[in-house]
Image (tube, rainbow, N blue to C red; front, side, top):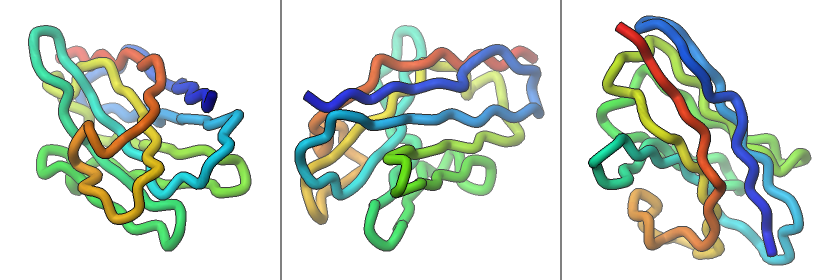
Length: 125
């Protein structure tokens, strides 16, 4: 069973930055893409960003474009989310997810097969 471990969350003031990491291990299949989602209290889980392992194509939610950057290190099986100019509305638990599906709609939660346990990001005003 694949294991996805997120790290890098924490408390930061508005305007600050954080970098999240998601390391995948025990993977026995070919992964095509990884994504980041977030869920604030009382809200549904929402798409943040995704990246394909081959070619490194990226997509972002409109709410984070220009502020967040997703990247990957194929050798380390690790995906990163650099978050700059953070706002209080970015406060949420951030989850990484792994997709076995080629060409899926990676903005949807059902495109992903495995999920990490989440890491809390809190942005104070």
